[in-house]
Image (cartoon, rainbow, N blue to C red; front, top):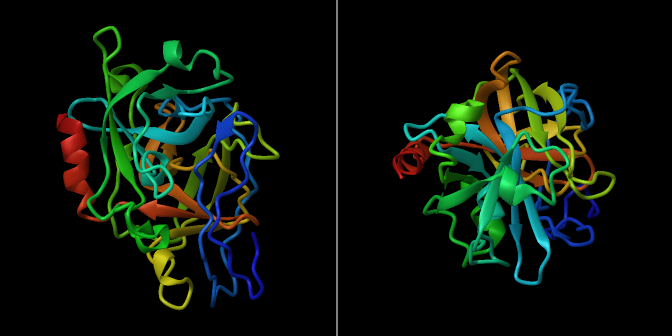
Length: 276
């Protein structure tokens, strides 16, 4: 929701029937951005799906479906997915979902996510993601790694491949594709959408403190449900994978999104998820 002066209200984005969509809208001030890099609006992925990108689905206590996005990331156990921390724990929902599923290459599978998906075995969020605090105070830590169970003795990475995780600092002015499954209007969450542009790291004078260090992509209308979706550089069509530099964290509600990159300390968190 827009506020006078170009800031944004810290309220959840609109949901659609039977869904709960934890994409955050927080206070973002784009001061000093006189010529932000151009980016396309969210479009359908031309190949339909990406093997290493998928959808997170869970059933809430009131019987609705919770939706987020995520991507397989290379790890020793072959069973790790990267997403946003607010997808699994938030100030409003401090307890993680009781049963959480990841569906790689999701495409119109809302009724079959348990048979098509890989069940999440454990959640790994950074210590700084303290949901007893205000969300704007912990946005620097809005990333998470999920460890999946095997299916038929195989890991998700064996079957679908994986993306390479990159850690801060993120190089600017590199081509990036941001992918996810937006489910709030005008989208239905059933198909993969993406925006393309160049990375722009938010620095002092460009944003308020909660979003400093985040990656900005203007002109991208990915909506709720795309939370946790990957920001991929160096995408390789053959392997359907790339370098994962961030996950979708917040949106302005008027066509700007911010991705949260992985700080150096995220290496230990990924190692823990990859050893689980």
